[in-house]
Image (cartoon, rainbow, N blue to C red; front, top):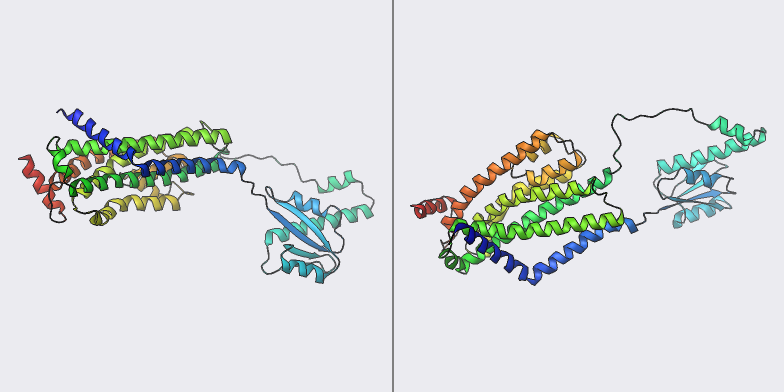
Length: 395
């Protein structure tokens, strides 16, 4: 059997086994629905809030309109009149209003903690009302009042162009980082559990009677990786389609770049971690022991994931730059920088070159560990013993 045919047969077997699993299909369907729901949700979520201001006595003319003019976003402002301070304080304790303004004492009353922003808005509305009353007493026309209140005409300029899609980029970068980490760790875990299962059930012995260990490893990584890549592409297409329909993901200015960087670095990251997972799985003889060898492999990826989430507002800091170049951490760090930061082209080239070199080294070393440990039973195999056994097999 040729090497290409052997790898292709093993890969097909891995794809068929995984896709036949009802749990795998259900999990994929739930993830797909969840991603689409999160993409469409902003279209239907109305983050309207309300601010209620109580006024002792009659609400001055224009007071509520001035408050509404200074409100942010969809904040709705209402002003309510109370005959005396006692009734206003009762409403404040009951939560009917957020603040009580007593014009006679020129005092703001809070239930407990004050809100400096709301206080400034109420004072500005009160000052506006007093100005209008004074201007009316002086006989000023509305046009003269506007001239007094008109701000000086000033121009504006920005040193950098504004990015209207900044919020969308941040959301996609955050989601892509989470998806990359989960996809690499989850599908890498499939490789590990598959290797351990085949070893403990002695299926590996049957497989190795027909194919070489390197072909079995390559087919396993290729098969599960192809299935994972197809799932990522399906999720990416779903996000682009749902985002375009809901108007939440601009295409192609943001969406294509986010999906392309996520998929590209998933391929590099999965090639590294799946090979390491396979070698780690060959070292143990029971599923219960798999957790012990999983953490050393997953730790660099987990560290990069945590750093990426904590530095999402500053993606080009020194730590992020270093982690985006190191092959074990680049799969989750570099896509984030590409979407949110300013990455020089040479850093991308260095990152890809180092990742490809590391993949080759990983395949060589981890492949020898896999070959030397896969048929050894009776206890957990040390890496040194696995490499020695691989040398014996080679001779």
